[in-house]
Length: 105
Image 1 (tube, one colour):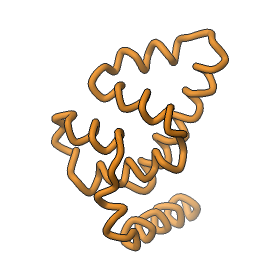
Image 2: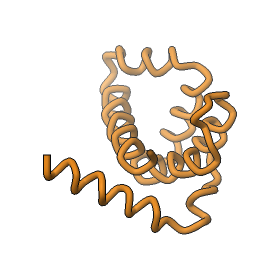
Image 3: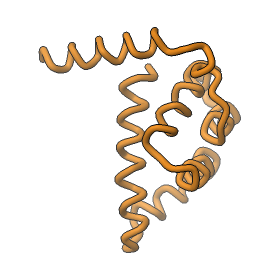
């Protein structure tokens, strides 16, 4: 329990200490997030998600993942694929999602 609280506190501090440009981070993930039509897709949250993507995914992966915002079925196709490259992408995508969830609440 102590680890969870410490991690949550660290993530909260990280978000509050982020520079203003990180909040409005340009990129394909940010754009896809903002165009998703979801209520939670605020400028700040989408910018934070872009920053997490920048840390966890390379440029090509970010372009591919951005398409999943409008076509989630493609994420499932990658997840179910037997290709080693898709398996590797899925693992990095999961790590990206965990990072974004930790710092972008």
